[in-house]
Length: 339
Image (cartoon, rainbow, N blue to C red):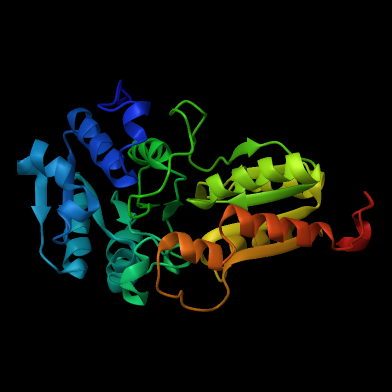
């Protein structure tokens, strides 16, 4: 019998006040009632990652290993071998880099049922500097065999992702922000499915493919460009970077012939690379640009300032769309000369 969470302990009005982490913490508590095999683990970050909410409700199913991330994932692997469902939460930089070997070898190599909820993704912890930025984590995690990689757009999508992850028999990496990200979706009922993109704006001139905090920015940019430039901009939320929705990508290539990817991540190995791989394998051509960190470490400052600096915000996306629309390329329907 499948297990379902029939309701949540927060509503859409709460979502405007709750962070991504707080919503996932509440969702995890709801799931704890349905899945008695869930155990939660952290490396002395229960408060910062909000997994402490699970600790308050289920103290006997919670483990704080101290500041020892490699042990954290090794212990989670052992628990999974006994039939438990470990949910591990720490900062994305630590999950993807400090404990990369344990995630790869202890968890992914054995295809164990461990769920990783990585907070402070991208440049969300901007003022903490490069050591706490996670701008390579998606590239690292999607390279591990058996790993599912999800980057929710907001707290509401995070709730959907956490619930969906429990139905995946294997490791899942969910990357969220620090907690000050605005809500994009109005409610949970928009058709979230692992591996299936969500088209949040229709469009025929160009497609913006995005994930995480850039989804809201891309949607705002599309609305502005429709009103001011009479441009029809399709916006696709690729919340699941692996497995990626090839069908949605190729539909966009065929119908708009212009693709812009936007990610709070390096452009090497992340969303843009995943999309480019799909297009290259198809043998079809299009105008294509990747927005993100261009082979560099991020500056230190407020997240909003960094989003602006690296063209990840609505203004930057508007600028890039206009740039791409000015490019000349072959627009005929004959693909034979492009294979």
